[in-house]
Image 1 (cartoon, rainbow, N blue to C red):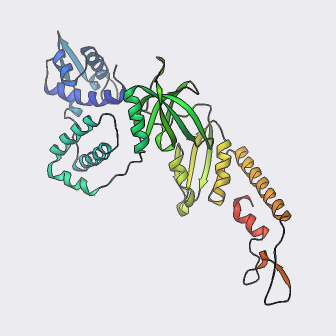
Image 2: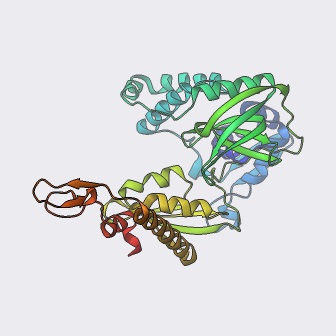
Image 3: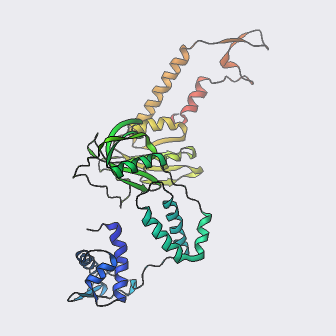
Length: 362
């Protein structure tokens, strides 16, 4: 059965085709669109339920059968096939050229054929696409190794960094497919450690090796459906709101956020969902004055407690550390090194330094 990702474009092309070819044989139409006749009948049943708002009989598309022939009518609003503007066509040319440059990409022949057809249709206007350069984050070495494992049907061993826990894990996986999603390359594989299908971002793979054993993907393992996006939180995940300064905007790019709102002075207010807030507490401490937890209040209080505990340990160690005494050439008195700063202000005094670490805790 076709998925939503390829069914919708087919339906949008099917209706104009049948409007311009009334009385076509079902077998011939199925061959044109490269689907079985049974799938075509399912598509036509769905078309019969589509139309203009109101959903009265006169608003819906009509599908009529005469033996093995079909005619579509009452669909004048989409009678013409989808046509691209010059800008849309150039955008596709740029995207396909960038995709064709991805090392060891599966389906590169299909990309080359689509690009050749599009460049022919666009003509001389395609030359403008040459002035645009697109850089896709892809680990060429890792991707080549993964591609080799997929072709040979071999398992892989990964040293994989998990940002949510700030740790590197070791795991054996059975590769299923390579994906390019939102500019990042992913390996979808059966993870033996958690006994489930997981996505591994290749730029987070610190080391990998092809194992001398066959990949054993269980029959029950199903590829993830990505039509709704890569980030698919669980209902039980906690919603966390962060305010980020300009220096911390990278957080919105590095971690999956469900919303991001621009703030004054170049900052961001982001919302994300997570089953574990431990890594967020560490992130908030690392951000310091560049970011803070807004919601939930309990997490914000926990971060404040963590910061105060860290500052207390710092103050205690500072108090126990021996002072180095030097001679001040301007006065016949011994001064600690911490007081050597022009203008008389102490260098690295407790109050100044503490406020500089986490000013939003004041």
